[in-house]
Length: 471
Image (cartoon, rainbow, N blue to C red; front, top):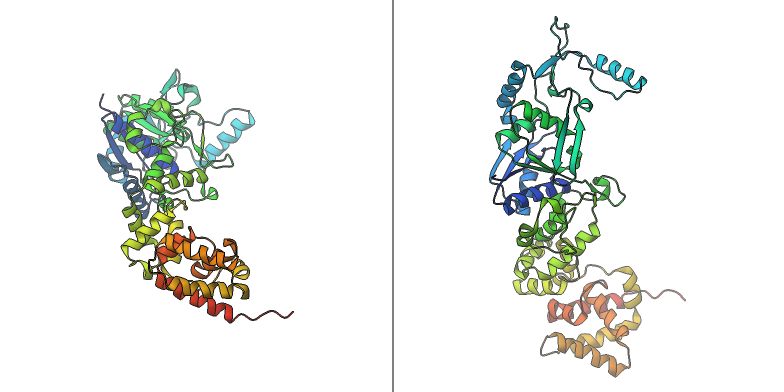
């Protein structure tokens, strides 16, 4: 059997983390088995579907590197095919027109609830042959089998058996003639020869209905694998209240593609205790039976930890390119050598590329202000002679290297009988504007001798202009 999987998102928003995981699982299974991966855009919800959402999905797939062999196919371009299938079912007596009004359906439901019955359409028009009621636009329902059961050999959840008595006659065409989801997905999967449907377990209720519909059309149901949902840290289904939930938001934040793929594959799939996987390892190891049966929890701290591991190993030139793009526009033309130095200093300190850019501005731009709390502690009158003396010594260094800078500061501290904690912090605040920077000698080396001396002069002037509080 030639494996064929599909990813079929609805373009009503961004590419959700859950959708991205489904796409990844489907892509991995197809690639690992020498099969084909199909992209289908389920855009029949005309009111909510937008081109911007389509673009976001396509961009997200491209960023993740999930290339597809066929598509994207758009359901709105296949209405003639759906109508053909609906008519075929009507002609073969496998579907019928239902003229129930909304009021009738509501009354039916209320009566069933009152009688402690499960609310379900009572099939009153299933074998109707009389005169249709006036003024009611009919929907079209599928004649679901009345007896027997549907057996789903789910590759994740195991065998699931659903009695046909529990299934009603689902609507396959609305009163305005548009086909419904369960009809379109069945026709598409059949026409596109999909062999394996990998999706979230929120679709499990649709599966027996779709299997019956496929069989009614003379098709062979695909193999199903339903992955449990992704939950937030509060145990509820992941949503915006849990933070960013779109792939694009994490790409903008500066999560590396490799880290995101690694994190997604571990959301509900495992291979022993291994945490980090290259794409090659995923392809070699991924199996549907490795998908966990229980829900997984999205942990943004774990994602950031994983991203940090990938940042440590990433190509420095690629990180420098990204860093330059994320810096303020006026700083984007920074010297290449300096960008590379900053990357090496920062890659083990930050969790994302956006954090790297935010905390790296200090290397390229003189402070416009000082962080109030450390400045109050370290940029007072007592630090004035320290900064003045060190400025002169640093200005005279013949070799601007970390070792020489460290020696210069240490020698000064020894001469004055000061601990480094009295000398280093004033220099750091004066040069960086805050206390958050890598090792002082490496930071000063990267900033450069001329800029360091200039920044020390600025800090000295700042201290000289301070007004002593009244005693």
